[in-house]
Image (tube, rainbow, N blue to C red):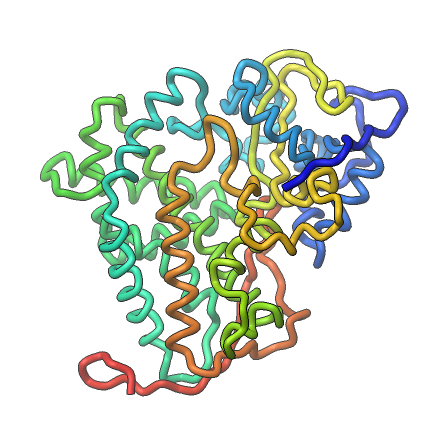
Length: 426
């Protein structure tokens, strides 16, 4: 990756965030067919840091610059991860029923805290990830994927989101957490609702916490060799709240984000001739498609959030103490200052994107997440002969959310595969 001279922020008086009006809603960056058009317009008007509206009367800065995101994520002394540092939690501007609360309220896990407490809460996560046997996990995920595909292979048609991508990640980690099948499916539904921009997001959070409380209570009574028992007994996690919220963090990363990346990679493999050719011996394969998705359509278009701990300036914008900073990963991955040729998606093998985050809070589960994604995509393409999109590509739409652009559905057709009595295809 190369760099080019910085783009100067547009000249003119800069007003504090609270005084700005007529702002673009953050949800508009994910609701359109091509977010880059919206980001380009915001960049031209405001520079790499633009004011946006999260909800009516609730504003934030959208950080769209690659270097600016590195600044915000690396400078913990200036930008906090703790939503308690957001002025909207204290000045009455955030309604009690705000749909922002599930994603921008304090949790007792490593994602939402800073400094020494962050290091204390991150250590159990890193320890849990280090215990994963990648070869065994690869075999287990492949078997799981084959099982899930077997449930619809005989139909000759499926929705690769609802029937596959939404199921595989949560089931892939369910056994490690000691969740049974019913709990796994209820948890998947609850996490999906938390991410969705709907009225049931707050209730979904409560449902998720109840499921986790039940399984933690069971493991405290009778520990097993699973990740829940590991976390429940870890000395760094002080009290049930830290255990529950650490589990939420791991499950969201393993479920919602992984599901989105599986779906986006399958979409790309089935609709882009550069990758679809792989099914017929083309040169670009699944790993290349994953890299392109992580550059162009990462699981989180916009990630909440950092909060300014003091008055400062970022890319010419007057950031005030308590301002929220939304991390625009999709925008930053396309920052023209790091793609001087104007073709950011042609850089095969380049993994310098920001889709795993950056700084002390970068995702600690990148390796197992990529393993699940690659295995799920490869297995689907292998076990669904002649798989093809069942609708025109322009009819694919995303789930409404200001945070991401996961396809609502990917309807496909393929040659039906008969399952034998022993579960083998025939």
